[in-house]
Image (tube, rainbow, N blue to C red; front, side, top):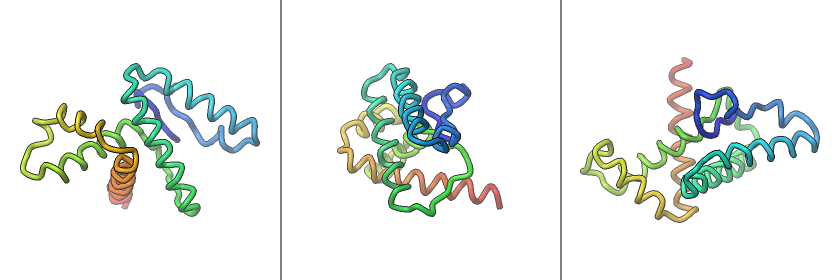
Length: 134
């Protein structure tokens, strides 16, 4: 499943059941994503969600055998991407103390740079999840 927005709200989850249908399912899936994105008040954060979704689509299209047996929480993915970018560019500073600056800097990155960090964050979070399940 994909969770956009508040991870504790069941209404923010898009499950695979919408994608198992035919074209009607694809339309329902797109409408659900659009509905959830419209709930995000900040336009810049909404755009990051869109870019993260586009990155995930490309990742799964390029890796058709890639399977995720758990929810992908966009807030967690994006937040981790911001942290990774901050650490890479500011190795000697504390992310927790500079979180607002880290987000400000991330918003200035190009979509391609954001995509690279989203993929890096996805790989890291998937690795952590796999280690928890061992």
